[in-house]
Every structure is written in structure tokens, then in C-alpha cells.
Length: 120
Image 1: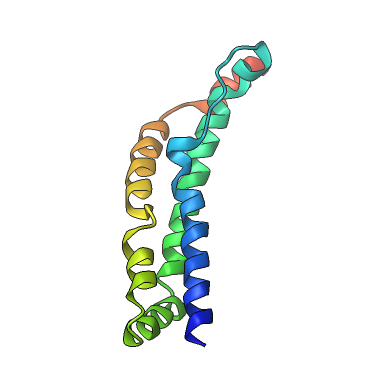
Image 2: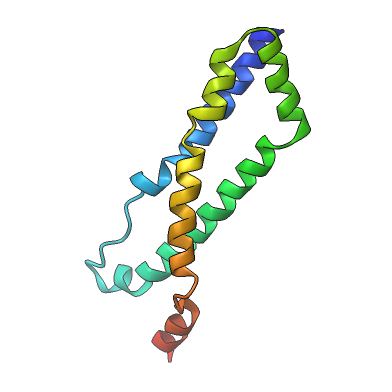
């Protein structure tokens, strides 16, 4: 039973890491063509806002009683590797901080106005 629980937590860690590496690994359009240049700014704003929401959702999920109970169970069984990795080694805190900074900067970016101006 404990092996299955630990395996589940390890799966959570892998899934969380897939999201938390996005700020440093996602290539953005370079604007090399007229088509990519036209929407590059909107894509980037959308990416950061969506990433911010995804990270908040992950944090909410980790704060649920069922996840806390799972971690308490593993700690009581002295299965510290998975619990420590989930609490400290997912990169969630750093990704949240970085994304919050970028999102705060982009909140004032008039993306919808610029998109409407292009169509005019």
C-alpha cells in the first residue's frame, strides 16, 4: 500500500516539474515572419497569465486535505524522500515567484488594444 502511495506522490512531483520548468524552457516566437510577429506579444502575455493560473491551481491542489493526509501518512511511515521532494524539490516556489513578477509587469500591457489596432 505504501509503495503505491509513494509512487503516486512521485508521479505528482514529475507532473509539477513539467509545469515549473516552463518559464525557463519555453521558446517564444522570434518575430522572424510577419505572421509570428503579429501575434508574438499576445502569445507571450497569454502564456504568462495562463502559467500563473496553472501554478496557483497546483498550489491549491497541494493545500487540499487529501494531499496533506497523504504526506502525513508517508511521513509517519518514514518515507521522507517523496515528502521532502514534493515540499522542496519541485521548483514550485521559484516558478511562482518568477511568474508573478512577469505577470505583474505584463498586467499593464495593452495587448487587447494593440490587437484591435492591428485589425483596424
